[in-house]
Length: 470
Image 1 (cartoon, one colour):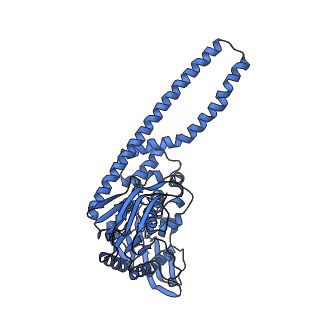
Image 2: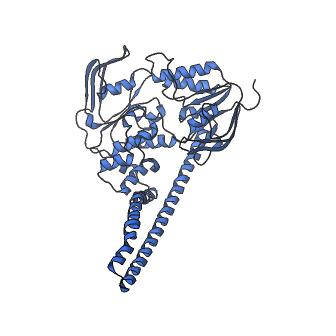
Image 3: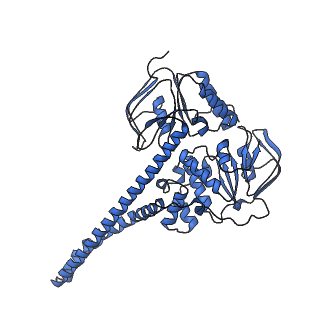
C-alpha cells in the first residue's frame, strides 16, 4: 500500500493562457480522504483538477503524486463508446471503467453530468463506499450531501471547510453577501473619485477661462492667439472627448449598479404580466411517433401544453430531448401531428447552445427594451442575481450555465412575453448561486414550463404539477 499523501501540491500557482491567476501559492496534502471541490462557474475548478492530475502544467509550483491516479474529465473522447448511446449512457460507461480500474486516487470532474435518476443513485452509492482517495468537482446537491470535507475555490483564495453541506451553503451565502457589500463599497469609491475628478476639471476650466480673458486684455495679435489655442483645441480637446466617451458608459453603469445594489428590487417586477390565456394550447401533439438511429423512442404520444408546469422525465436515451425538438418543430416526427405556436414559446436548448451569439446581455436587453436607462438594466440584472461583470461579455464566451441565465433574462423581458418556457436540462452547469437564482425565477414565472430534468429537488422547488415519464 502507498505510504504518505497520495497527492501533494507545493506553492502551486495556476494561470489562464491570458495570464489571469486562478490559484495562487496553494499547498495541499491529500490522502485517502473524500473531498468535494466547490466554487462558482469559471473560477478554475476543472483547471485545478487537470493540473493536480498531471494533464496541465502550472505557472509555478510542484505537484507530487504517489500511487495510481485516474482523472475522469468533463469532456472525454467517446470514440470507444457504442454508436447511438445517449450522453447519459456514455457518462455512466466512463464512470464504470474508472471504478473497474481501482486507482488509489480518483479525480472526477462533474460526474453527475447527463446521468438519469438510476445512474445518479448508482453513483452516490458507489462513491459513498469508495475506500481510496477521492477528489470530486461537483455542483450537484444530491452528491454533495454525502460529503463532509469541502475544498472551496474562489478568487479570494482557496480554503478547506469541514462540516455538512448545509453549513457550507450557509457560509457561502454569508460570503456572497459580504462580497456584494464590498462591491458596493468599491462602486461608492469609484463614484466619489469620479466626482472629485469632475470638480478638478471644472476648476481647471475656470482657470483657463480667466487666462483667456487676461490674454485678450493684453491684445496679442489674432494670429498669435489662434496659434496658442491650436494645441488645446486639437490635442487636449480631442483627447478629452475620447476619454469621456470611453469612461462615460462605465460611469453610468457603475452609478446604476450602485443604486440597484442598495435597493432590494423585487423579482416579480422584473417578470412580465401575461394576458389571459387563449383557449388554444401553445403546443399540441397528436399520436406522435419519433425515432433515433433506427430505434423507436416513443409512439402514439398525445400532448397539449399551455400554461401548466410539466417535467419530462425518464432514463438516458428515452427521448426527452427528442420530444422537445419534435414538439417545437425543430425535428420531424415520423408519425402523428404537431402544432406549435412558436411566437408564444421561449426555448433554451441543452448548454444554451441556441444562444451562442456574439451579442452581450446588455446588447440584447438594449434591443428588446428600446434604449433603456442604465438604472432599468441594473435593476433587472440585480433582481435576477445575474453577475453584473458578465453582462457586457458576448454570450458565446460565457459558460453554459451563465449563458442559460442570460437567455432567461432576455426571455423574461421579451415583448410580447412568451407564455411557455421550454428548457432542456437547465441545471446541468449551474453553480449554487446560479441554481438558487434559477429556482427563484422559475418559481415566480407566471407562464407555463416544459422542462427536461433529472433533478427531482429542482423540479419540486419550481412548482411542477405534471410529470411525463418516457
